[in-house]
Amino acid sequence: MPIDLVYLWCDLADPAFRAKREATMRRVGLVVKEGDNGACRYLSHDELKYSLRSVDRCLPWVRTVHLVVDDDIALPAWLNPAAPRLAVHRWGEIMPPERLPCFNSATFEFYLQDIPDLSDRFLYANDDMLVTRPLAPSFFFASDGWPIFRYTKSRLDMDAPELEDGFLHRVRQSFFFVRDTFGVVGDYARAFGCLGHHCIDGYVKQDLLDFRAACPEAWARQVAHPFRSREQLQREVFAGYAFSRGHAHYRQIRRPWWETVFGRPHRDSWHCSPTRVKMVKEFRRIRPALLCMNDNPDATAADHARAAAFLQSLFPEACAFERIRH
Image (cartoon, rainbow, N blue to C red):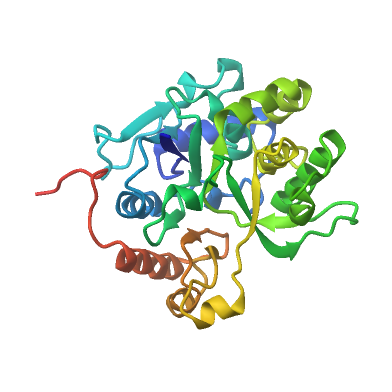
């Protein structure tokens, strides 16, 4: 079965994009603090380049890479938009004009199913997510064709009135929404309240279409926010809906200790920050199949330089998605 890969990308260093974001912030009266809508959520440090290199090397079976970007933003200078397996889309092709401009990945993710020519089974990645070794489609989709969703052992506080971190608060709201709307069915009981691994996942387009048809009011409320809001849901609801239909499989990212002893990878995926000083040593110990180099407000220029050197060491060679430089 054909499997595509979707990225969302932006860069606050682009003057047109930055000006449009600032104008929209003034229009809606948004006062930004570092966190959900802070600058680090919009800046590019060429993570996309290394992510594409990892996909070109490790996922050669991906049919098309769909890169979705703002209507006015300039593409990275190194990117070859005419690459054979690359399709570049502007949000104006996908979202209705009344929802634009938008600067909210939590809104964008509810439009993934509307990307033109997207395969029914597809992978979704942020631009800071990488594949560190060759993987088969079976890593993302089980033999029955349904996606495998991965979770950590970390559990959210499901009894607190609200969580301070906006992202975690939305994730918890998503668990409650699934529980109250579809029930906690089958393997979702193991996932309920646990943090997802925050890396590349597989989805079935028809499930996303059916979710929108089943929950039109919730979907309409979700996409009404041009910036991230505590009132929103996260894409965890897609996994919960799939579990409720028997269309998903649960997997714990941490492998049993005896697999590590015999040289198997310690985790399926690893979430790392540029501020992690010993990232190379930890990466070699954990040997994850997937890596997320997630930016944060505390990262300095030296931190980003260290992270870039690490990614360059993993993927030093240019790939088919890049311009040929003479």
